[in-house]
Image (cartoon, rainbow, N blue to C red; front, side):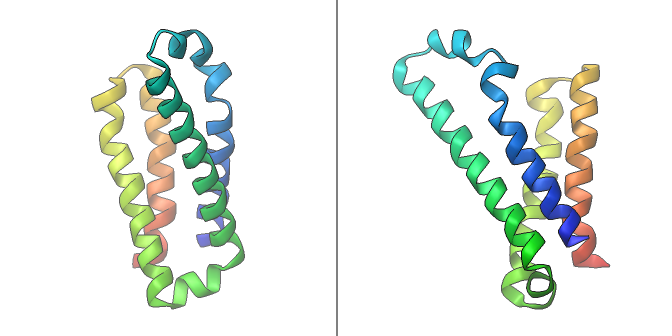
Length: 119
């Protein structure tokens, strides 16, 4: 399950690499002050790197993550992140069909990171 959670995080990281073309950031961010556009791009790149790194770590160090205090704390933090993201989904993106569909993806991430803690 921890390896699956890692794969999920890697896929989310790859998804973040598509944000600029997928969400039309080039034109949307051009309307922002340069500093705010830069913040959006920098935060997205940092999240991308973080998801890729955490995913790699979960996939390659699953035994250590499952059996050490530090590893379980990391997993708890990631579970909290995904449960928080699930709560944020309707708040920031409404309840349109696409938002609900992505909410289900986020729910899968929350479960993948939680089940190893309680199972």
